[in-house]
Image: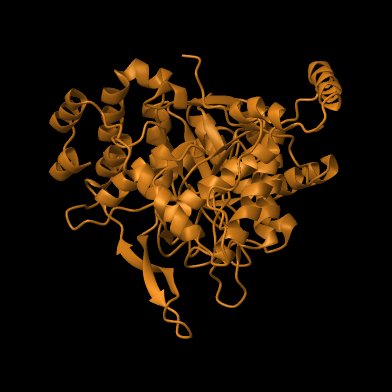
Length: 512
């Protein structure tokens, strides 16, 4: 299989110079040397000790804890074992992703696993000053996330042409969903409704076997799944600051030892509370946490495909909630993208989160400038990019449709220029030809580049009146997308999954 989604190759914006990159690396190494990390997983502590780290047990009143201090060479030698290029597979091979640390090819996807689904409808309102004037205005309704809404989200995301991979944007909270069956149902709802790459965390370690079995059935067997890894995993192994979590570390051990599938080692400190708010301290700490997690994967199984997972955010100073729509969000994450490139590691990053609770001007502003800036950073795998509002608490499907249009314009804006001898010759010939005409217009010469997609189209949701109709037009287009046929798994595959995987909701077999 040689097909991949195109992505967008960019010329990375280098915020940091080489001296600053070296300074951040050495600062991270100094943090890992002293104070080191607080490790709540004994297997991880023992493994680090076997490979030269200084380890001793802390006296704590609660859970057992080991302090681990790392020599720099243990980290740097482990990083050299991580592959710089990985493949993320998909049900449709044309939707596979090639993630290469040395090629700044940008992909955008969804994410966050929100608890709230924000439904949008248009209501008619009569003007007080003139009852002949009727306007349609959006009305928003919050819904609790469910398996059916996850199916709907996956189908919508299948239709969004600029969404390259799927991390479930809504959590399933049905009364008949519990810890034991949560993972199999979220993976089935996703895989049965989208043919793009599916990625998620594990709620419960014991579910891993069934999730892998499901993926093997869909892929065509264990070997085919390794060739085309249509699922991968996220492991936020650190609770900032510098605390390696026991149960997440256990999940990393099992994912790495038993599957060989790609895994994101992510860290999400909050500058100003669980990390310094200053750029140097924040970036050095998140880098230290991510590098330790990646080192763990390579000590467990050298060559494990892993992504450097930067999810850095800043605290609001009034209530200590996350603040995404601020310059520091871009600065932290751009620095991390550069560090990932320095280590030759594929980079998982973030963009497109708004602090606004509903679609509108604030949401558009906050999302657009993080979408653009993080794409310019050259981070290969950018999640959170579709539909998120109220920080990462709400998924709004019509917002995802609007984000898709904006990301498409950004991808077009950042495409590499094609200026060479051939295009120069064509330009001269065209200008000569037009200048011999009486009208001297280039209109007829625009048709070919427009049809070829070389020239951008007008904004899909543009308003041509004095009244803003962007959300209304977005809802109309969303209805078109959702009316398209769902690309479900075939009936035989679904039956085999239901026969072999316990805990699946019967209604998902029929309705999704």
